[in-house]
Structures are given as C-alpha cells and as structure tokens.
Length: 194
Image (cartoon, rainbow, N blue to C red; front, top):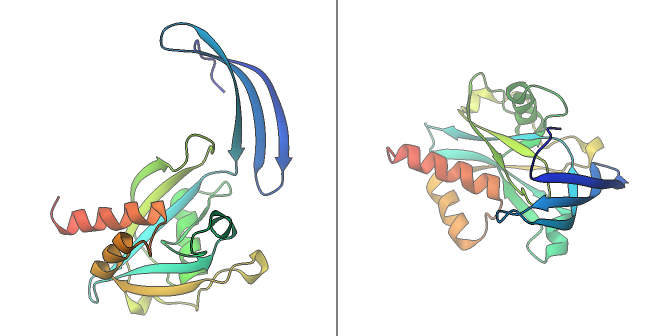
C-alpha cells in the first residue's frame, strides 16, 4: 500500500476472515484544513468482481438473473434480486472470469465482450471494484442450463426481459441492484445514440 501524506494507519485488527476479510483500522487523517483527526473505520475485502449485461438484438431482450440474497432479506427489501450476471474474479482476468460466470449462471457462451469501465460500488466500506462488460447474445449461444453452482448455494433463475420492460422495472423498484441499473442505463443511452 502507498504511503500518503494525509493518512497514518495507527493500528489494524482483523475482525473476521470468513468469505472475505473484515478489518478495523485506527487512522489519523489530515483534513483539508490541515488538522489531523483520529478515526476508526471498518473495511471489508472480498476481492474484485465483474458484471455483464447481454443484449439480444433480434428479440430486444436483455439477459438477467434472479436469486435469493440474504443481506437484502435482512434489509427488509424483496430478497429475490433481479441482476445482471456477475461474480468474483478470484485472481482471474476479468474478461475470462466473466465468460465463465455467464456460462455458469445463464448457460450462454459468448465470444466477444466489451469492457466498459471499472466502478466502485460501495467505497465507504468495501474495497471491491467491478469490471463492467456488455455483449450480444443469441439463442443459439446456449450451451447449458445455467442456474449457478449448487455446491456454492446458487439457485439462479435466468430471465430474458425486453429492454423497455427492464427499464420500467427500475422505476417500479423491481430492479434495485446498482450494477444492473448502471448497465441497463448504459445500454439505453447507447441505443438512444448518446
């Protein structure tokens, strides 16, 4: 980690090392006015990930998934979340890992993906960035049933949703996943020529 003239890490303590690592940091942070402030922050590191929205130009549909998300259940929101396919990189190249996730989750094998950008989804507490991709799919690209890895607890429903319906689902709250909203809006802007 780089040294910074605005930050002094006084102490760090690992609180949990299960699926990811949760660490508590005691820091001294130099504020914009030059004064130093003591702070305590918790940082969750579970690695980086990738997400992809596939569009079928023949049907006008996007390929989405729906699965149960325990943290969403605890937040009081509907726990069966509609999302763009995504997964952790686990040390792999984002493009290669995304292709594998697409087969695993949706059953579609895609030859070309376009990398859009890398975004931080929750920078106040999580180290993860997501590599965002887009691509085209056709029904002939289906090579398996998809549905995820049962051994990993995945039980994924594959959905073919017309883009206009998916955009309406954002407004109604049926699609509330941030990465999916970003990707759907990106596709809508592209189709509008913006």
